[in-house]
Length: 244
Image (tube, rainbow, N blue to C red; front, side):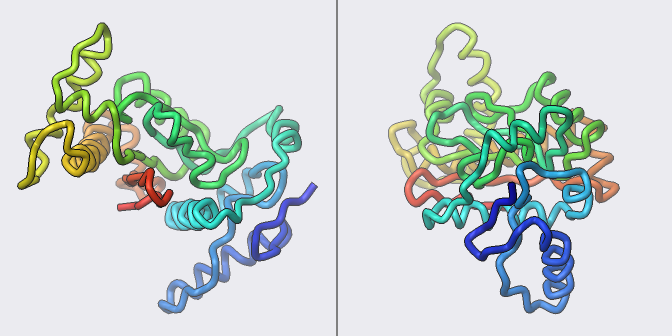
């Protein structure tokens, strides 16, 4: 079964459209919409391998645009389930928060088999998540590591307010270094969500730095141009995923 996007493109146009976009983008005249990550029931190895990290990021941006405009692809999840039963070829690994309002697959309008997803309060990195990212990129071939924070993050507010609760205390301790590093002239309290959001952005930046510092595997892949490590913030109001 072949899915179509809002622009009516099907799977057979995937490679031609991606190549055309690359050529047009090189001239600075890229005005057409990017393709989605796949139009078929699931992403194939050929589709994934044909895309550059920048094209994958552009596809995420386009997917988020569809999400905000209510024009999401009608995914056939049962077909995607069947298509991925014997193998998977995701294009990216996404590290995001456990917040119930921030499901990355939905916000970026992707389907089964298109992204690896790791979720932990405050979208922090640790050894287990780094190992998972290394598997995603070095073993399976994902080309993008996307760290996604979000506005009004409870974990960030908890770190600012010095919350303590069992194992959560240690998790919040990993966020706290982002607080003094955040430049902000207003009220530096958890009750001020402008400050919470500023710290959340800093936390994303620090997580990206820590991924590079703590994973020589991912750092080398990035240095060799095989992957990109990028940050983003999801805005609960409006629904935009802001990439940076």
